[in-house]
Length: 287
DNA sequence: CTGGGGAAGGGGCCC
DNA sequence: TGGGCCCCTTCCCCA
Image (cartoon, rainbow, N blue to C red):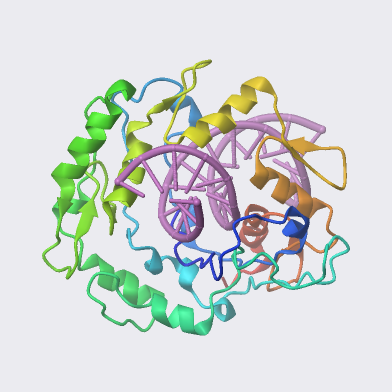
């Protein structure tokens, strides 16, 4: 999920204050990515990823082309000021140190329309998206329909092979680029590419059920589904959650004014998915 | 149909 | 450079 348009680190503030979770306001990008076909469901991952078929991610790898860069003013789904929320812990706005999905500033948006490959300036996200296609060679868009079997035990070797074999410099790019061997994605750093490749090799295997994950912490979260551990408790009710993001979503249910607002009817929702459903149901037929 | 919970994916940042 | 953690987002399922 391209989220690079989210400038999360305006200043350093590593430790989150979960008392502020309820009063965060976020951008409500209504982007077509939500309608893109998704990858294999969970059941397909319950065994080693032998012979997995990976769908072609035809979406431009460069995040700025994501519709998420659209100007908030262009969307009916605008940010919502929740300063009046009854569960606001402090009443101060944006206390989270920029870790929210608040709309990027106009200046940031302006910068987002620059091609990360050649620096070309585009007038709109769509123009940038179209321009980015010019950087994509035919070979890059090949579908990986027959990914070689990769046992998790050899994941490290696979990563090494993939990175060394794919660290290339696109002919049209002024700087080094690292292309994934298994999908069309490309990254500016080797580390980012290696991180991505883990999503193909899935080196973290659950000892209980054998399900494989790309990151150790993903595996830890999964293990909680076996152990029943729920370390994230709601301060407003007795509920507890295994996942912090789920707690964050739950906290929205305690707020009278949810942070995802429909720009047409001003209804608010606790989750963006609910807002998307609402929009798709015909509230905003022009959108 | 809507709202909410559970589970998971993945990029970015910090150490 | 890599691990750990951050956050956001999505899908699925159920009430």
